[in-house]
Length: 175
Image (cartoon, rainbow, N blue to C red; front, top):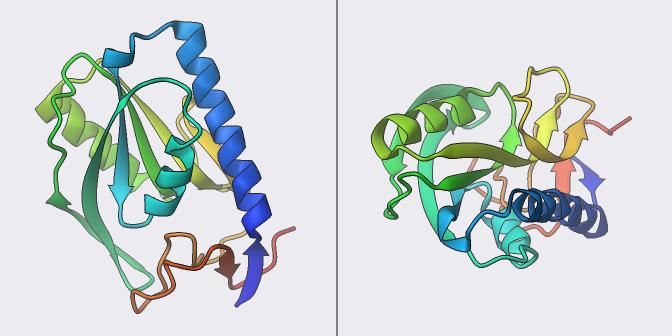
């Protein structure tokens, strides 16, 4: 595997995402009690932690966990940990690691809307694959130009290791 993104490149991507979110929060003048950030575990935990340090507004956070991969293979989505906060009528920033096929974000959005009644859900990802149809309101840090399997910075390899790397490795070089 090659190093695709350095720590510095990831920091800049997180800063860019935070800039867009902070702008959205200030432009819309949401009340801090109305804003919740939800981290999709396990892959987004490092991105989420770094992102939250740059959000300029008071907010609540929670965590949700779904399992949608076995090794490198996408499988049926299973909820393994639900949120605990009441998000009824709140603005939810749903923070995930990568927008790949869109199945996970779509499944989580449907789950949260049908069971928790938020006012709005805004998807946020560190990465989005270029050859996917992304929601118009997706806030993304880096658009991928290839279909590499990514490892590091929260993303694990097919054996569940390497989430702790401070950079991203992948099978192919970015253009």
